[in-house]
Length: 226
Image: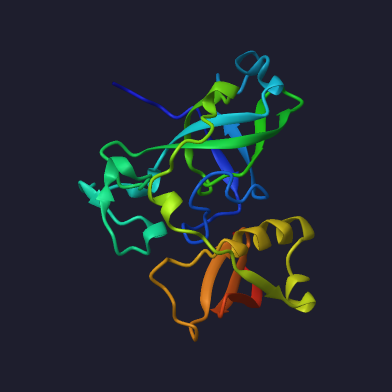
């Protein structure tokens, strides 16, 4: 079986740190999907604008050389309990394939007729290869479905504090996305050091913050080369 990418996504997540752990957890974060020829032609997307959401099938391209195991430690369980890899969404899988539900914000067509898709609610790293796209339909919803350990462990969002002089370094449209990401606590679940200053790359900026008593304080934002 041979599978080749049809395109790639561009977004603000240059590094793994800070990427939402599931799609639509942070609906504010956006990205644009670009396509390789011939898949960038309008004929491939005829009627897609009639769907609000899409399924993205993609490649865990950064997991090269990393082998899978029968059990994994989900972040939601604090990295302390193991479950079977097929009972998780771990990137360390027999076949490194991801599945994400995202919102279709806009279909773009440039002067030459090439198509790109603006989407939101993403959980993919910048330049992740896209393998396929399918429309999300109403029968994909299963009301009252159980979600295993996700139902058992409540998640508490953080309160984010950022001074105006700090946030002024970054464009307004990115500030909204950044704050939404920080509320969900981007730290590894095993990290609880209240004195540690964490660093996170977001678009062309290095974000530094601390977390104490449920409050995340952004201490600095530094522009860097992307």
